[in-house]
Amino acid sequence: MKVVIKRMEAADIDAIFEIEKSAYGEHHWSKESFFNELQNNIGYYLVAYEPTTKTIVGYLGSWMIVDECHITNVAVDLRLRRQKIAEQLIVALINHCYEQFIKYITLEVRVSNIPAIALYEKFGFKSIGVRKKYYQDNNEDALIMFTENIWHEKFKTVYNNLVGRI
Ligand SMILES: CC(C)(COP(=O)(O)OP(=O)(O)OC[C@H]1O[C@@H](n2cnc3c(N)ncnc32)[C@H](O)[C@@H]1OP(=O)(O)O)[C@@H](O)C(=O)NCCC(=O)NCCS
Image 1 (tube, protein in one colour):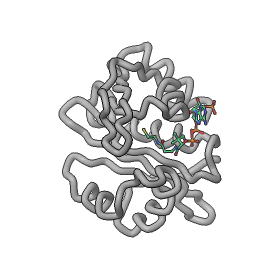
Image 2 (cartoon, helix red, strand yellow):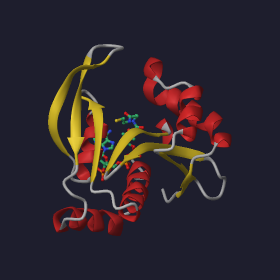
Image 3 (cartoon, helix red, strand yellow):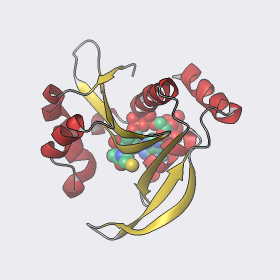
């Protein structure tokens, strides 16, 4: 599904919160967390919406820290998964990273989260280690994933191929 990507605004948070609850169940962020993140100077938050109905169908959050981007959250409406919405959000994030001269993109992901790990691997993220019992709700380990330098040809080739296929 072709979506339009824009910066997240406070008015989007009710719709985002519905997706957040169904995506993460009892481990979801609160509305306050989203409001706080919109005030965070290093935060860069995006939403994806369907252009005809303007319905919000997914979102992505990140922090820009010097030359690194850290993905804090990404989720897509349960009913609209596997339609390359997350891919389009990550492409938009990477474009922003190039504009901001970011070199690396990183994140933590639950070791059990196969869909998310597969999504990041598709963009060339590699697992560089584990943070033991990182998630306090169930003591699950986090996989630490990193891109290589996004300015290197190898990353750009994977990225350009994906952009061409969306
Ligand atoms: C992870 C998530 C954001 C993916 O969103 P999506 O829009 O369905 O993903 P896309 O359609 O863009 O998929 C892109 C690629 O990711 C991988 N992928 C996505 N869902 C997958 C699944 N269920 N199983 C295996 N691979 C999957 C595939 O490589 C896919 O490419 P392909 O369809 O060409 O095979 C979505 O499943 C989600 O919201 N999950 C709950 C929240 C979450 O866990 N977020 C990650 C926190 S770190």
